[in-house]
Image: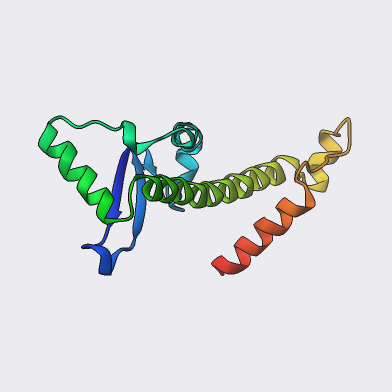
Length: 145
Protein backbone atom coordinates (compact mmCIF):
# COMPACT_ATOMS: atom_id res chain seq x y z
CA UNK A 1 0.00 0.00 0.00
CA UNK A 2 1.35 3.39 -0.97
CA UNK A 3 0.16 6.86 -0.13
CA UNK A 4 1.03 10.06 -1.94
CA UNK A 5 1.13 13.09 0.31
CA UNK A 6 1.22 16.62 -1.08
CA UNK A 7 2.84 19.01 1.40
CA UNK A 8 1.69 22.58 1.81
CA UNK A 9 -1.56 24.48 1.78
CA UNK A 10 -2.11 25.02 -1.89
CA UNK A 11 -0.12 26.37 -4.78
CA UNK A 12 1.62 29.19 -2.96
CA UNK A 13 3.05 27.04 -0.18
CA UNK A 14 3.82 23.80 -2.00
CA UNK A 15 6.68 21.94 -0.32
CA UNK A 16 6.75 18.66 -2.21
CA UNK A 17 5.31 15.22 -2.68
CA UNK A 18 6.14 12.24 -0.45
CA UNK A 19 5.70 8.55 -1.15
CA UNK A 20 4.74 6.98 2.17
CA UNK A 21 4.92 3.25 2.93
CA UNK A 22 4.29 1.25 6.07
CA UNK A 23 8.09 1.07 6.54
CA UNK A 24 8.98 4.71 5.97
CA UNK A 25 8.94 7.61 3.55
CA UNK A 26 10.78 6.94 0.30
CA UNK A 27 13.77 9.24 -0.08
CA UNK A 28 13.89 10.32 3.55
CA UNK A 29 17.32 9.71 5.09
CA UNK A 30 16.01 8.30 8.37
CA UNK A 31 13.99 5.50 6.84
CA UNK A 32 15.18 5.05 3.27
CA UNK A 33 17.38 2.06 4.12
CA UNK A 34 14.22 0.23 5.13
CA UNK A 35 12.41 0.75 1.85
CA UNK A 36 14.88 -0.13 -0.91
CA UNK A 37 12.74 -2.90 -2.36
CA UNK A 38 9.52 -0.90 -1.93
CA UNK A 39 11.13 2.09 -3.67
CA UNK A 40 12.01 -0.01 -6.69
CA UNK A 41 8.59 -1.68 -6.81
CA UNK A 42 6.77 1.64 -6.62
CA UNK A 43 9.03 3.24 -9.24
CA UNK A 44 8.37 0.34 -11.59
CA UNK A 45 4.62 0.83 -11.14
CA UNK A 46 4.92 4.57 -11.72
CA UNK A 47 6.78 3.97 -15.00
CA UNK A 48 3.49 3.01 -16.63
CA UNK A 49 1.14 5.16 -14.53
CA UNK A 50 -1.38 7.20 -16.45
CA UNK A 51 -3.68 9.28 -14.26
CA UNK A 52 -6.31 9.19 -16.99
CA UNK A 53 -6.89 5.56 -15.96
CA UNK A 54 -7.46 6.43 -12.28
CA UNK A 55 -10.79 5.79 -10.62
CA UNK A 56 -12.49 6.96 -7.44
CA UNK A 57 -15.10 5.53 -5.10
CA UNK A 58 -17.72 7.95 -6.40
CA UNK A 59 -18.32 9.97 -9.56
CA UNK A 60 -18.29 13.20 -7.53
CA UNK A 61 -14.85 12.36 -6.12
CA UNK A 62 -13.58 11.42 -9.57
CA UNK A 63 -14.83 14.68 -11.07
CA UNK A 64 -13.32 16.71 -8.20
CA UNK A 65 -9.92 15.03 -8.66
CA UNK A 66 -10.00 15.48 -12.44
CA UNK A 67 -10.80 19.18 -11.98
CA UNK A 68 -8.00 19.65 -9.42
CA UNK A 69 -5.51 17.97 -11.74
CA UNK A 70 -6.74 20.12 -14.65
CA UNK A 71 -6.16 23.24 -12.52
CA UNK A 72 -2.54 22.13 -11.99
CA UNK A 73 -1.78 21.68 -15.67
CA UNK A 74 -3.60 18.52 -16.68
CA UNK A 75 -3.06 14.78 -16.62
CA UNK A 76 0.11 14.76 -18.73
CA UNK A 77 1.73 17.41 -16.56
CA UNK A 78 0.77 15.57 -13.37
CA UNK A 79 2.07 12.24 -14.77
CA UNK A 80 5.40 13.93 -15.50
CA UNK A 81 5.50 15.57 -12.06
CA UNK A 82 4.89 12.27 -10.25
CA UNK A 83 7.55 10.44 -12.29
CA UNK A 84 10.15 13.19 -11.89
CA UNK A 85 9.52 13.37 -8.15
CA UNK A 86 9.98 9.59 -7.88
CA UNK A 87 13.19 9.78 -9.93
CA UNK A 88 14.55 12.38 -7.49
CA UNK A 89 13.61 10.21 -4.51
CA UNK A 90 15.19 7.14 -6.15
CA UNK A 91 18.43 9.09 -6.47
CA UNK A 92 18.38 9.69 -2.70
CA UNK A 93 17.56 6.04 -2.00
CA UNK A 94 20.33 4.91 -4.38
CA UNK A 95 22.87 7.14 -2.63
CA UNK A 96 21.81 5.80 0.77
CA UNK A 97 21.99 2.21 -0.48
CA UNK A 98 25.44 2.64 -2.02
CA UNK A 99 26.77 4.34 1.09
CA UNK A 100 25.34 1.64 3.35
CA UNK A 101 26.75 -1.17 1.20
CA UNK A 102 30.17 0.53 1.10
CA UNK A 103 30.15 0.84 4.90
CA UNK A 104 29.15 -2.80 5.34
CA UNK A 105 31.82 -3.99 2.88
CA UNK A 106 34.39 -1.85 4.62
CA UNK A 107 33.50 -3.37 7.98
CA UNK A 108 33.55 -6.89 6.56
CA UNK A 109 36.96 -6.40 4.95
CA UNK A 110 38.72 -4.38 7.67
CA UNK A 111 40.56 -6.88 9.81
CA UNK A 112 43.16 -5.80 12.35
CA UNK A 113 46.67 -7.18 11.94
CA UNK A 114 46.04 -9.56 14.83
CA UNK A 115 42.87 -10.84 13.19
CA UNK A 116 44.66 -11.36 9.87
CA UNK A 117 47.39 -13.38 11.57
CA UNK A 118 44.75 -15.59 13.19
CA UNK A 119 42.46 -15.79 10.14
CA UNK A 120 44.40 -15.19 6.94
CA UNK A 121 42.27 -14.26 3.95
CA UNK A 122 42.56 -16.59 0.95
CA UNK A 123 42.43 -13.59 -1.41
CA UNK A 124 42.97 -9.90 -1.38
CA UNK A 125 39.86 -7.96 -0.51
CA UNK A 126 38.56 -5.88 -3.37
CA UNK A 127 36.03 -3.11 -3.31
CA UNK A 128 33.40 -3.50 -6.03
CA UNK A 129 32.28 0.12 -6.13
CA UNK A 130 32.97 1.98 -9.39
CA UNK A 131 34.90 5.24 -9.11
CA UNK A 132 31.87 7.31 -10.15
CA UNK A 133 29.87 5.82 -7.27
CA UNK A 134 32.70 6.46 -4.81
CA UNK A 135 32.71 10.09 -5.92
CA UNK A 136 28.94 10.29 -5.35
CA UNK A 137 29.23 8.85 -1.83
CA UNK A 138 32.13 11.19 -0.96
CA UNK A 139 30.19 14.22 -2.22
CA UNK A 140 27.13 13.15 -0.26
CA UNK A 141 29.16 12.82 2.95
CA UNK A 142 30.68 16.26 2.41
CA UNK A 143 27.22 17.78 1.95
CA UNK A 144 25.99 16.11 5.15
CA UNK A 145 28.87 17.53 7.19
